[in-house]
Image (cartoon, rainbow, N blue to C red):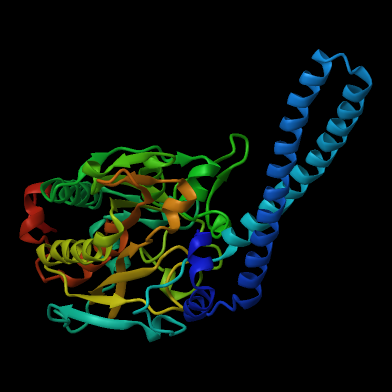
Length: 423
């Protein structure tokens, strides 16, 4: 969440930047400042009360030794009154803190100064593109038809055993899934990431720490009996490994990679854009997470984008890099790049990765700090990215590589699949 110091240092700038996300924060920011002032006043009164109580306690001891019982009784009465006042002040302080925290938690992250104030995905900025976008056949098939033709993915069987949005991968389709997971993990290890195998269920504190709660509670699957949430991405458990920790400066940057299944309710999704693999309730993804010093985080963001686009180039997929505008950027992000691939069968661009810098938004929630060379403690910056999400990668691979002989497998994947064609 936004730190109080950010708001205190330049409230007008925070208001202006949040307006880029189309958030009218004027009243909220002023209320936060007012509550903070009142909380500080209550804290000062509590401190003064404690100081008086301590002084009276010492005085009572001295007077008792002097045999002045009546005077001591008067002081005891005064001390009792101070304790009653302290209870009232403490209650007032807790109430103010609760109100203040509720307002801070509800505010999204402040976007980076370079983010443009668009409203929808149509307003996003295309940074660069690579690869030739074309159709290899006069009438290329979409991946759902290809999946049926080659018996790769069974959407109906998934609906039978679970429901819509839970496909069953079969035969070479299942092997392609496993090959992509291993390929992405091996590439990340070669790039210096440490592999993590996280739990698929997290507690409320973890979901809050990375910003899923309270913002995305309706999009998460909740196990009520155990008060746990199914993860929407490995970002949640992996980043929370460092919750309530102070890292040494020599520990930075932290670079972790994790494969996981991901679970998303996708409430409100409907229509042609959710057909096939385009939008699922359960899917596989390899996630990269970095924790770094603030002064290096935007350089790290660009390096992570380069890394993800390098994967797409090895898969021989036409792609483009898109910088999200204020209206399309997420609640917790300060800056996000999307990587999209072109799916020839659908003749459309599909998002396959989002790489984001959250600055101190997550670390402030998680109390994730580091100690620099001077011994000073500061909040770290957190970043994460899909590297990569499998469903739309599979869709593009199938659609872009269909030939008269079958579906061609990119050369980089053949050592992992064990076959060069799906026939």
